[in-house]
Length: 167
Image (tube, rainbow, N blue to C red; front, top):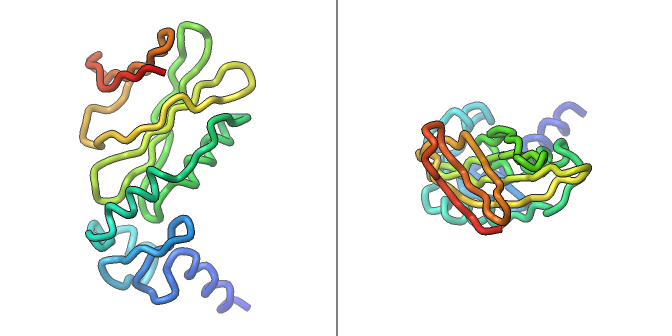
């Protein structure tokens, strides 16, 4: 029974040939076979470089609901976008002048120094995804989000505008 469980769990991460990683129902080639998930995760060049564009498309094209019922539901939706062995998480919660809140989450795009950002606006009981974009990881970190009418602006710690979008 334990052997069956280990094989099942291993196949959820590694493809059936041991040299692929499974994400959203697709197999992506690793740079080599890894003995464990930890070995894979800790290797800086763990994926075939010719797979990176396909992985980026899989992450950025993965659908996310536009309306959710809670922050927990939004966090779970973002977690489902995470590529195995790479990061995702909350980037902050930013109060708005109208009393709503913008919660920013990001998902790392493997080996490309880019992240997919998801921004949910809490107003009342529902959360509406108001922005979904890709930005380089090496840019200044988002430290402030301001919704003003139909525009959303993102600033770094020094107040430099990083992104602006008409909603």
